Image (cartoon, rainbow, N blue to C red):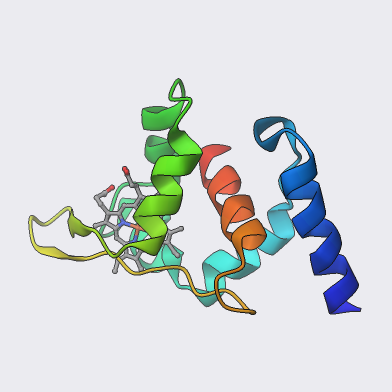
Length: 111
Ligand code: HEC
């Protein structure tokens, strides 16, 4: 069951207009959870909340491209307490699944 579904998601992401496409909230939340994104981003514990990040990118046409880069290239980030570390990359199953990554990003931007 999983593979045909993923194939569809993949086709849907590339066939249609990226920003107009509906976000699969359940899939995004599951991926966020398995990557422990909330450990730092929930309620702005160690990092900015997804709401603030969404606000920052509200009028940025390059938002998706910038966040793909952010989430795949281990950039250096500054935590709310001032310490610095590499940002983690998103782990998908299968690895490097761009449709899942884009869905996660659109979910973050939808906050
Ligand atoms: C160990 C803590 C930590 C984890 C885990 C983490 N982040 Fe972050 N993230 C940060 C910090 C620190 C920053 C940079 C400063 C800020 O925005 O508060 C950041 C920034 C971001 C940004 C904003 C980039 C920008 O250009 O403003 C996004 C989007 C983001 N993270 C998404 C995620 C996602 C999605 C996950 C899960 C795959 C995740 N983060 C996991 C700490 C974390």
